[in-house]
Image (cartoon, rainbow, N blue to C red; front, side, top):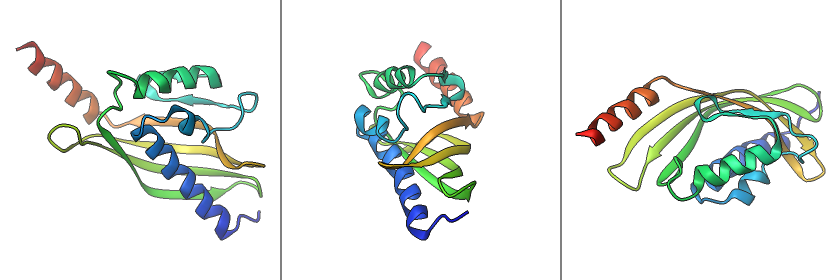
Length: 152
């Protein structure tokens, strides 16, 4: 396995691009972080759904960052990034995610971990092939509390 320092930097940049595209409501930029539709391996986003096709993921992301979407007014921060080469052209990536509310009173609203995402080296650079998001349970407690406060 021969993943270079340049490969590692490009994978870290892919993760950052993924987060910033979400924050900027840039669906096309987000989708550019993924392999082509025929190579897509899926995205299991936990409570948000399991997208098995590239088109399902694109529709999800358009809703996620669109008007009223959960990503609006948020900043997604990737931390604790671990990149493990699987071959010269494939790696496993695990990292934590911290989601900050920035449009209202600033606070952490969610934490999660992407476990063993698969990235592959393509002729267009490193791209995600498969991801799984494990959202920490505190997020659901916060959402429940917000819903109760809205009902009052």
